[in-house]
Image (tube, rainbow over all chains, first blue to last red; front, side, top):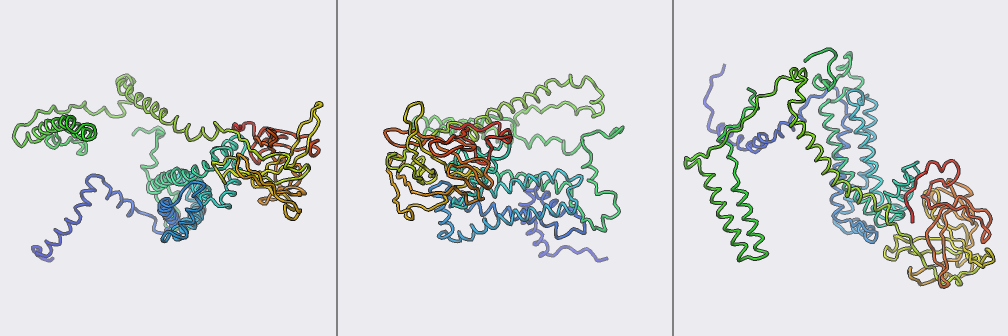
Length: 264
Length: 319
């Protein structure tokens, strides 16, 4: 057993530096518990045999973040009026520094986002990861898919060229063919009886405020449930083999319904 | 006792005080005074700020000057009885009527505030799309400029203020006049180019203008420049999904669910004025003798006759 030696001057100095550097984090942790929360999120336990396919959800999240970021920048240059929309898109593409790149990222990233959502959905389906107790997360995922598709639909009109205009005419009128409420939905989307300036600003507002807000909130719920319920093992997992069922943790299962005949 | 619930030590909490509020009001009065009346109002604000600031400082430093302000310690009821007892106790609901009242008052007030905020916002978001949709009048110029029996492709802006966004196309044929009840009434066939499938622009299938050896008719009216291109159509066709129509707008092939919409019209001072559109299931006969099966203006893709029309019992208001 080594004898305890008084720490050298350099060691003391390093310790002081360390605690000084960590002080802001301590300050934050003491007042918010955020540091512990982030640590819990990053270092939580996952099954040992998780698969690369299980990174598709993170990939989808990344694609959404790229869309959000590039979208914010595009909104600084885009003008949602019938007179200016197309020329501002041309300006972004041809004249604004790196505008072609940001617009390209947003345009192609939109497809990437949708494709990744479907791949992620397929993974969850094939792994059976939608089963108890994760049904609600599947439902939230479906809402995210619908919101993502609506983002695609509303974003398609914004360049305000012939393709965008007529595709939106057809898309809106398709909504109108739904029984009962369809005609009302179509007229709401148009902002009137004909596609015009109101349609463009309406789609712009939906595309950059309403739908991204909804998607961000739903992603928050989605992640919360992922953290709360944990990650599923792949179907071929040896680790999980033979277990009765990958039940939710005990404290999760304790619901609002009383235990049969039990008193706590 | 649970360490989390242990009250903080009294000396860490300053006593309740109003002085900072008075100080803040003084500062606001100074700022308002700078705009309205720097001499009088700002001075008043300055006095308020100084007085309250001094009182605040005095109180805040009282401890350092060893004159602790007496602070009434907060008293709390003992923690509620264990849950089992509460469930068993039938009187428990009666024992806390005030908390129940406060609970429902909070929820109720929240609901009222939510409603007050939501109704105008939701109304603003939804209603303009349905209300105050005004009809339009489009002046196509003197009807005598249109040769009788000749089809024209008319392009015009419905609302010059909206410019190109409101550009529409109609197929116009002057049928001359027809005798109704012993009176000579002008007759025109004016077909909207909005496809009855999903609203794409329908084209005339046939030679136009120069090929026919005819010149475009150009009118300048209240709706700006109107161009009427002569055309000899064998029918009308949609480029999007292949819907086909005959020259009366009857569907002959493809996915459309009814015939092409038509414009109602009137003659004013010899000018042909296009009014609102209406939907048509089909047309019997041709030209001035045509019998038009007319329906209220309906969106593309919606049935106006047959059993399918029951899928669209309601329709948004139209002009």
